[in-house]
Length: 339
Ligand SMILES: NC(=O)c1ccc[n+]([C@@H]2O[C@H](COP(=O)([O-])OP(=O)(O)OC[C@H]3O[C@@H](n4cnc5c(N)ncnc54)[C@H](O)[C@@H]3O)[C@@H](O)[C@H]2O)c1
Ligand SMILES: O[C@H]1[C@H](O)[C@@H](O)[C@H](O)[C@@H](O)[C@H]1O
Image (cartoon, rainbow, N blue to C red; front, side, top):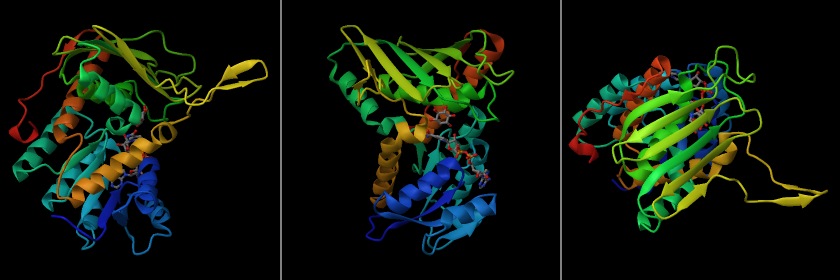
Protein backbone atom coordinates (compact mmCIF):
# COMPACT_ATOMS: atom_id res chain seq x y z
CA UNK A 1 0.00 0.00 0.00
CA UNK A 2 1.46 3.33 -1.01
CA UNK A 3 -0.77 6.36 -0.70
CA UNK A 4 -0.89 9.90 -2.03
CA UNK A 5 -3.63 11.19 0.29
CA UNK A 6 -2.84 11.95 3.95
CA UNK A 7 -3.16 9.12 6.43
CA UNK A 8 -6.32 9.51 8.58
CA UNK A 9 -5.29 8.98 12.22
CA UNK A 10 -7.51 8.30 15.24
CA UNK A 11 -5.80 9.44 18.45
CA UNK A 12 -7.02 7.46 21.46
CA UNK A 13 -6.59 9.21 24.79
CA UNK A 14 -6.33 12.99 24.68
CA UNK A 15 -4.65 13.62 28.02
CA UNK A 16 -1.25 15.25 28.23
CA UNK A 17 0.56 13.05 25.73
CA UNK A 18 -2.40 12.42 23.40
CA UNK A 19 -3.25 16.12 23.09
CA UNK A 20 0.40 16.81 22.24
CA UNK A 21 0.33 14.10 19.55
CA UNK A 22 -2.90 15.60 18.11
CA UNK A 23 -1.12 18.96 17.83
CA UNK A 24 1.93 17.24 16.31
CA UNK A 25 -0.04 15.41 13.62
CA UNK A 26 -2.15 18.48 12.90
CA UNK A 27 0.69 20.99 12.69
CA UNK A 28 4.13 19.38 12.54
CA UNK A 29 4.06 16.03 10.80
CA UNK A 30 3.48 15.76 7.06
CA UNK A 31 1.38 13.14 5.30
CA UNK A 32 -1.21 12.65 8.03
CA UNK A 33 -4.27 14.32 9.51
CA UNK A 34 -6.26 13.72 12.68
CA UNK A 35 -9.65 12.36 11.62
CA UNK A 36 -10.84 11.19 15.05
CA UNK A 37 -10.07 11.77 18.71
CA UNK A 38 -11.24 9.55 21.54
CA UNK A 39 -11.33 9.99 25.29
CA UNK A 40 -13.49 8.58 28.07
CA UNK A 41 -13.78 12.23 29.06
CA UNK A 42 -15.78 13.69 26.16
CA UNK A 43 -14.87 17.26 27.06
CA UNK A 44 -11.17 16.43 26.77
CA UNK A 45 -11.73 14.88 23.37
CA UNK A 46 -13.77 17.89 22.22
CA UNK A 47 -11.04 20.27 23.37
CA UNK A 48 -8.42 18.27 21.44
CA UNK A 49 -10.54 18.30 18.27
CA UNK A 50 -11.26 22.04 18.42
CA UNK A 51 -10.06 23.76 15.27
CA UNK A 52 -9.38 20.55 13.32
CA UNK A 53 -11.64 20.37 10.27
CA UNK A 54 -13.75 17.22 10.04
CA UNK A 55 -12.28 15.61 13.16
CA UNK A 56 -14.76 13.17 14.76
CA UNK A 57 -15.10 13.08 18.55
CA UNK A 58 -15.68 9.74 20.31
CA UNK A 59 -15.68 8.20 23.77
CA UNK A 60 -15.38 4.61 22.49
CA UNK A 61 -12.12 3.62 20.73
CA UNK A 62 -13.77 0.79 18.73
CA UNK A 63 -16.40 3.19 17.34
CA UNK A 64 -13.69 5.59 16.17
CA UNK A 65 -11.76 2.79 14.49
CA UNK A 66 -14.89 1.85 12.53
CA UNK A 67 -15.06 5.33 10.92
CA UNK A 68 -14.42 5.34 7.16
CA UNK A 69 -11.75 8.06 7.35
CA UNK A 70 -9.62 6.26 9.97
CA UNK A 71 -6.62 4.48 8.39
CA UNK A 72 -4.36 4.20 11.45
CA UNK A 73 -4.44 4.54 15.24
CA UNK A 74 -2.23 6.34 17.73
CA UNK A 75 -2.84 5.00 21.26
CA UNK A 76 -2.06 7.48 24.04
CA UNK A 77 -4.57 6.40 26.67
CA UNK A 78 -3.37 5.23 30.09
CA UNK A 79 -1.28 2.02 30.03
CA UNK A 80 -4.00 -0.35 31.34
CA UNK A 81 -6.30 0.72 28.44
CA UNK A 82 -3.74 -0.15 25.72
CA UNK A 83 -4.52 -3.87 25.41
CA UNK A 84 -8.22 -3.39 24.55
CA UNK A 85 -7.40 -0.65 22.03
CA UNK A 86 -4.66 -2.75 20.39
CA UNK A 87 -6.96 -5.77 20.06
CA UNK A 88 -9.69 -3.57 18.50
CA UNK A 89 -7.15 -2.20 16.01
CA UNK A 90 -6.06 -5.75 15.10
CA UNK A 91 -9.70 -6.69 14.42
CA UNK A 92 -9.64 -4.05 11.67
CA UNK A 93 -6.02 -4.73 10.72
CA UNK A 94 -5.13 -1.08 11.35
CA UNK A 95 -1.53 0.11 11.81
CA UNK A 96 -0.82 1.39 15.34
CA UNK A 97 1.62 3.66 17.10
CA UNK A 98 1.19 2.69 20.77
CA UNK A 99 2.68 4.87 23.51
CA UNK A 100 4.86 3.05 26.01
CA UNK A 101 4.27 0.86 27.90
CA UNK A 102 2.83 -1.55 25.33
CA UNK A 103 0.83 -2.88 28.30
CA UNK A 104 1.61 -2.73 32.03
CA UNK A 105 2.51 -6.42 32.53
CA UNK A 106 3.99 -9.39 30.69
CA UNK A 107 0.79 -11.51 30.50
CA UNK A 108 -1.20 -8.77 28.74
CA UNK A 109 1.78 -7.95 26.47
CA UNK A 110 1.92 -11.63 25.52
CA UNK A 111 -1.80 -11.64 24.64
CA UNK A 112 -1.20 -8.65 22.37
CA UNK A 113 1.83 -10.31 20.76
CA UNK A 114 -0.12 -13.54 20.17
CA UNK A 115 -2.97 -11.57 18.57
CA UNK A 116 -0.58 -9.70 16.25
CA UNK A 117 1.27 -12.92 15.37
CA UNK A 118 -2.12 -14.45 14.47
CA UNK A 119 -2.56 -11.66 11.88
CA UNK A 120 0.66 -12.92 10.32
CA UNK A 121 2.21 -9.47 9.95
CA UNK A 122 3.45 -6.67 12.20
CA UNK A 123 1.04 -3.86 12.88
CA UNK A 124 2.52 -2.07 15.91
CA UNK A 125 5.27 0.47 16.53
CA UNK A 126 5.80 1.03 20.28
CA UNK A 127 6.43 4.60 21.47
CA UNK A 128 9.97 4.17 22.82
CA UNK A 129 10.92 7.59 21.50
CA UNK A 130 14.51 7.57 22.73
CA UNK A 131 15.33 5.47 19.65
CA UNK A 132 14.54 8.64 17.64
CA UNK A 133 16.49 11.08 19.85
CA UNK A 134 19.53 12.50 18.05
CA UNK A 135 21.91 11.86 20.97
CA UNK A 136 20.80 8.25 21.45
CA UNK A 137 21.01 7.69 17.68
CA UNK A 138 24.61 8.98 17.66
CA UNK A 139 25.54 6.80 20.62
CA UNK A 140 24.08 3.72 18.93
CA UNK A 141 25.92 4.54 15.67
CA UNK A 142 29.21 4.96 17.57
CA UNK A 143 28.79 1.61 19.33
CA UNK A 144 28.12 -0.03 15.98
CA UNK A 145 31.43 1.18 14.56
CA UNK A 146 33.21 -0.95 17.17
CA UNK A 147 35.71 1.89 17.80
CA UNK A 148 35.16 1.79 21.57
CA UNK A 149 35.27 -1.99 21.78
CA UNK A 150 32.78 -4.23 23.57
CA UNK A 151 30.32 -2.44 25.92
CA UNK A 152 30.87 -3.49 29.54
CA UNK A 153 28.60 -1.15 31.48
CA UNK A 154 25.89 1.42 30.83
CA UNK A 155 25.19 3.99 33.55
CA UNK A 156 21.81 5.73 33.26
CA UNK A 157 20.29 8.58 35.21
CA UNK A 158 16.58 9.36 34.82
CA UNK A 159 15.23 12.25 36.87
CA UNK A 160 11.78 13.88 36.83
CA UNK A 161 10.87 17.11 38.64
CA UNK A 162 7.84 15.57 40.40
CA UNK A 163 5.76 12.42 40.05
CA UNK A 164 2.07 12.34 39.19
CA UNK A 165 -0.24 11.90 42.22
CA UNK A 166 -1.17 8.35 41.16
CA UNK A 167 2.47 7.19 40.95
CA UNK A 168 3.31 4.03 42.94
CA UNK A 169 6.76 2.68 43.86
CA UNK A 170 6.36 -0.02 41.19
CA UNK A 171 5.60 2.61 38.55
CA UNK A 172 9.10 4.04 38.94
CA UNK A 173 10.05 0.84 37.16
CA UNK A 174 7.06 0.06 34.88
CA UNK A 175 6.43 3.65 33.78
CA UNK A 176 9.87 5.28 33.95
CA UNK A 177 12.70 2.69 33.92
CA UNK A 178 10.81 1.03 31.04
CA UNK A 179 12.66 3.57 28.84
CA UNK A 180 16.11 2.48 30.08
CA UNK A 181 15.10 -1.16 29.69
CA UNK A 182 14.37 -0.51 26.03
CA UNK A 183 17.40 1.74 25.56
CA UNK A 184 19.69 -0.92 27.07
CA UNK A 185 18.28 -3.68 24.84
CA UNK A 186 18.48 -1.45 21.76
CA UNK A 187 21.93 0.09 22.36
CA UNK A 188 23.64 -3.15 23.38
CA UNK A 189 21.60 -5.60 21.29
CA UNK A 190 21.25 -7.87 24.34
CA UNK A 191 18.25 -9.22 26.22
CA UNK A 192 18.03 -8.48 29.94
CA UNK A 193 18.46 -11.64 31.98
CA UNK A 194 18.08 -10.47 35.61
CA UNK A 195 17.09 -7.42 37.65
CA UNK A 196 18.02 -6.20 41.14
CA UNK A 197 16.59 -3.06 42.75
CA UNK A 198 18.32 -1.25 45.63
CA UNK A 199 16.82 1.71 47.40
CA UNK A 200 18.18 4.38 49.68
CA UNK A 201 15.98 5.93 52.38
CA UNK A 202 13.35 7.84 50.36
CA UNK A 203 13.85 11.51 49.63
CA UNK A 204 11.97 13.96 51.87
CA UNK A 205 10.78 15.47 48.59
CA UNK A 206 8.89 12.29 47.63
CA UNK A 207 5.22 11.80 48.57
CA UNK A 208 4.71 9.71 51.75
CA UNK A 209 5.16 6.00 51.08
CA UNK A 210 6.77 6.39 47.63
CA UNK A 211 10.12 4.59 47.37
CA UNK A 212 11.94 7.31 45.46
CA UNK A 213 14.74 7.20 44.36
CA UNK A 214 15.63 3.63 43.38
CA UNK A 215 18.77 2.08 41.90
CA UNK A 216 18.07 -0.63 39.35
CA UNK A 217 20.71 -3.06 38.07
CA UNK A 218 20.02 -4.88 34.81
CA UNK A 219 22.21 -7.86 33.86
CA UNK A 220 22.23 -8.65 30.15
CA UNK A 221 22.61 -12.01 28.42
CA UNK A 222 25.68 -10.56 26.67
CA UNK A 223 27.50 -10.15 30.00
CA UNK A 224 27.02 -6.38 30.36
CA UNK A 225 25.60 -4.43 33.30
CA UNK A 226 23.22 -1.48 32.96
CA UNK A 227 22.39 0.54 36.06
CA UNK A 228 19.62 3.11 36.36
CA UNK A 229 19.21 5.81 38.97
CA UNK A 230 15.51 6.61 38.83
CA UNK A 231 14.49 9.68 40.85
CA UNK A 232 11.02 11.01 39.99
CA UNK A 233 10.82 13.81 42.59
CA UNK A 234 14.24 15.42 42.22
CA UNK A 235 12.63 18.87 42.17
CA UNK A 236 15.17 20.61 39.95
CA UNK A 237 14.68 19.37 36.41
CA UNK A 238 14.15 16.62 33.85
CA UNK A 239 17.38 14.78 33.15
CA UNK A 240 18.04 11.68 31.09
CA UNK A 241 21.71 10.81 30.87
CA UNK A 242 23.62 7.74 29.76
CA UNK A 243 27.28 6.80 29.76
CA UNK A 244 28.53 3.64 28.12
CA UNK A 245 31.83 2.16 29.30
CA UNK A 246 33.51 -0.05 26.72
CA UNK A 247 36.80 -1.94 26.59
CA UNK A 248 38.67 0.92 24.88
CA UNK A 249 36.69 4.05 25.70
CA UNK A 250 33.51 5.63 26.99
CA UNK A 251 30.77 7.83 25.55
CA UNK A 252 28.20 9.99 27.31
CA UNK A 253 24.94 11.69 26.29
CA UNK A 254 22.34 13.86 27.99
CA UNK A 255 24.51 16.49 29.64
CA UNK A 256 22.37 19.21 28.07
CA UNK A 257 25.31 21.54 27.47
CA UNK A 258 24.03 22.92 24.19
CA UNK A 259 24.06 26.46 25.61
CA UNK A 260 26.49 27.54 28.33
CA UNK A 261 26.29 31.10 29.63
CA UNK A 262 28.86 33.20 31.49
CA UNK A 263 27.35 36.10 33.37
CA UNK A 264 27.67 37.91 36.70
CA UNK A 265 30.59 35.84 37.95
CA UNK A 266 28.83 32.52 37.27
CA UNK A 267 28.67 30.06 34.39
CA UNK A 268 25.86 27.69 33.57
CA UNK A 269 22.85 26.76 31.52
CA UNK A 270 19.24 25.71 31.96
CA UNK A 271 17.76 22.28 32.62
CA UNK A 272 14.66 21.00 30.77
CA UNK A 273 11.65 20.67 33.06
CA UNK A 274 9.86 17.76 31.45
CA UNK A 275 9.89 15.21 28.66
CA UNK A 276 7.87 17.34 26.25
CA UNK A 277 10.80 19.77 26.26
CA UNK A 278 13.76 17.33 26.37
CA UNK A 279 12.34 14.93 23.78
CA UNK A 280 10.25 17.32 21.62
CA UNK A 281 12.25 16.60 18.46
CA UNK A 282 12.36 12.85 19.20
CA UNK A 283 8.54 12.71 19.40
CA UNK A 284 8.25 14.65 16.14
CA UNK A 285 10.71 12.31 14.41
CA UNK A 286 9.08 9.21 15.90
CA UNK A 287 5.59 10.13 14.67
CA UNK A 288 6.91 11.24 11.26
CA UNK A 289 8.76 7.92 10.88
CA UNK A 290 5.56 6.03 11.76
CA UNK A 291 3.48 8.01 9.28
CA UNK A 292 6.06 7.59 6.51
CA UNK A 293 6.43 3.84 7.08
CA UNK A 294 2.67 3.37 7.26
CA UNK A 295 2.14 5.23 4.00
CA UNK A 296 4.73 2.97 2.38
CA UNK A 297 2.79 -0.04 3.73
CA UNK A 298 5.61 -0.91 6.16
CA UNK A 299 5.97 -1.29 9.92
CA UNK A 300 9.25 -0.22 11.52
CA UNK A 301 10.68 0.86 14.87
CA UNK A 302 10.25 -0.77 18.27
CA UNK A 303 8.06 -3.85 17.88
CA UNK A 304 5.51 -5.70 19.97
CA UNK A 305 8.36 -8.06 20.91
CA UNK A 306 10.27 -5.05 22.27
CA UNK A 307 7.16 -3.97 24.19
CA UNK A 308 6.69 -7.49 25.58
CA UNK A 309 10.37 -7.83 26.57
CA UNK A 310 10.26 -4.46 28.34
CA UNK A 311 7.08 -5.47 30.19
CA UNK A 312 8.63 -8.77 31.30
CA UNK A 313 11.81 -7.05 32.54
CA UNK A 314 9.79 -4.39 34.38
CA UNK A 315 7.61 -7.05 35.99
CA UNK A 316 10.76 -8.81 37.21
CA UNK A 317 11.96 -5.41 38.44
CA UNK A 318 8.82 -4.86 40.51
CA UNK A 319 9.29 -8.33 42.06
CA UNK A 320 12.94 -7.45 42.78
CA UNK A 321 11.80 -4.22 44.45
CA UNK A 322 9.24 -6.10 46.57
CA UNK A 323 11.55 -8.96 47.60
CA UNK A 324 14.88 -7.14 47.77
CA UNK A 325 16.41 -10.00 45.78
CA UNK A 326 17.78 -10.67 42.29
CA UNK A 327 15.00 -11.76 39.92
CA UNK A 328 15.64 -13.56 36.65
CA UNK A 329 13.65 -12.57 33.57
CA UNK A 330 11.70 -15.33 31.90
CA UNK A 331 11.00 -14.52 28.23
CA UNK A 332 8.99 -16.75 25.89
CA UNK A 333 10.71 -17.84 22.70
CA UNK A 334 10.82 -14.99 20.17
CA UNK A 335 8.23 -15.59 17.41
CA UNK A 336 9.56 -15.69 13.83
CA UNK A 337 7.61 -12.50 13.00
CA UNK A 338 9.95 -10.41 15.17
CA UNK A 339 13.33 -11.92 14.22
N1 LIG B 1 6.95 8.45 25.55
C1 LIG B 1 6.94 9.25 26.61
O1 LIG B 1 7.92 9.85 26.96
C2 LIG B 1 5.67 9.42 27.37
C3 LIG B 1 5.49 10.55 28.17
C4 LIG B 1 4.32 10.65 28.90
C5 LIG B 1 3.35 9.66 28.82
N2 LIG B 1 3.58 8.59 28.02
C6 LIG B 1 2.59 7.52 27.91
O2 LIG B 1 1.45 8.05 27.23
C7 LIG B 1 0.26 7.46 27.74
C8 LIG B 1 -0.65 8.57 28.26
O3 LIG B 1 0.01 9.29 29.26
P1 LIG B 1 -0.48 10.74 29.70
O4 LIG B 1 0.61 11.31 30.53
O5 LIG B 1 -0.97 11.50 28.54
O6 LIG B 1 -1.73 10.37 30.64
P2 LIG B 1 -3.05 11.24 30.93
O7 LIG B 1 -3.61 10.65 32.18
O8 LIG B 1 -2.74 12.69 30.86
O9 LIG B 1 -4.00 10.90 29.70
C9 LIG B 1 -4.58 9.65 29.49
C10 LIG B 1 -5.94 9.88 28.84
O10 LIG B 1 -6.46 8.63 28.42
C11 LIG B 1 -7.86 8.65 28.67
N3 LIG B 1 -8.32 7.25 28.72
C12 LIG B 1 -8.10 6.33 29.69
N4 LIG B 1 -8.66 5.16 29.35
C13 LIG B 1 -9.25 5.34 28.13
C14 LIG B 1 -9.98 4.52 27.25
N5 LIG B 1 -10.25 3.24 27.55
N6 LIG B 1 -10.43 5.04 26.09
C15 LIG B 1 -10.17 6.33 25.78
N7 LIG B 1 -9.49 7.18 26.57
C16 LIG B 1 -9.02 6.69 27.74
C17 LIG B 1 -8.01 9.41 29.98
O11 LIG B 1 -9.32 9.90 30.14
C18 LIG B 1 -6.98 10.51 29.79
O12 LIG B 1 -7.53 11.66 29.18
C19 LIG B 1 0.72 6.47 28.81
O13 LIG B 1 0.85 5.21 28.22
C20 LIG B 1 2.07 7.01 29.23
O14 LIG B 1 2.93 6.04 29.77
C21 LIG B 1 4.71 8.46 27.29
O1 LIG C 1 5.31 8.50 31.53
C1 LIG C 1 6.46 9.30 31.73
C2 LIG C 1 7.30 9.32 30.46
O2 LIG C 1 7.48 8.04 29.97
C3 LIG C 1 8.61 10.05 30.63
O3 LIG C 1 9.40 9.92 29.46
C4 LIG C 1 9.39 9.56 31.84
O4 LIG C 1 10.52 10.35 32.03
C5 LIG C 1 8.54 9.58 33.09
O5 LIG C 1 9.29 9.08 34.18
C6 LIG C 1 7.27 8.77 32.92
O6 LIG C 1 6.48 8.86 34.09
